[in-house]
Image (cartoon, rainbow, N blue to C red; front, side):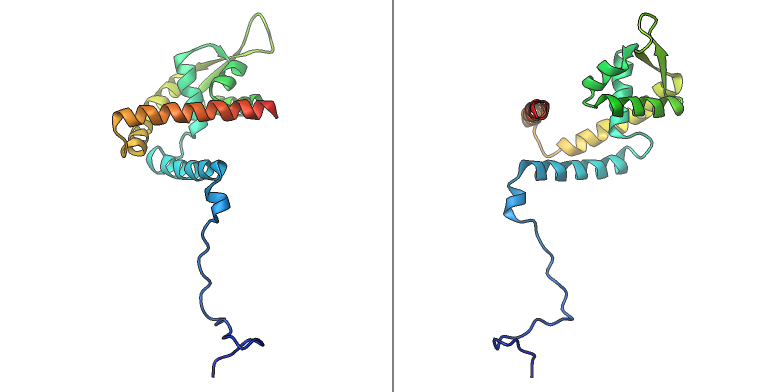
Length: 168
C-alpha cells in the first residue's frame, strides 16, 4: 500500500527526482533578466570562439586605443563603457602583459596616455578575426536589414539604460 499524507492523498515518492524548475513569468518578463541571459550566452560564445587570451573589455580597450593612439585613460573608459577604476586596473594588467603602454601626459602628470605595443597590435590582429566570426554567428539568424535594426535597438537600449544609471 502506498504512503499517504494525513489528508489521505498519496505522499510524494522521496526517491523521485525533483522537477526541474523553470524561470517564473515575473523573471522572464523582466528585461534585466533577459539581458543577463544574453550576456551569459555571449561570454560562453566568446570563450569558445575568441578564447581566454583577451576578455571582451580588454579587446574593446585595445581596439579603441588602436583607433585613437594617445587617448587618455579616463576618456577611453567612457568610450568603452567602463568606470575609471576598472579602466585603470584593466590598463595596468594590459601593460603588465606588454600589450599596452601608458605614458604620463607632459602637461598633466595625472593623465595617462595609452598606446598599443607591437605585442598589443599582434594580439589585436589575432583576436579580431575570431571576434568578427563570433559577431557573424550571433547575427546569422537575421537578414542584413534586421541586423542593422537590431543593432540600432540594442544601442538605443544601452544608451537609455546608461542614462538611467547616471540618474540614480
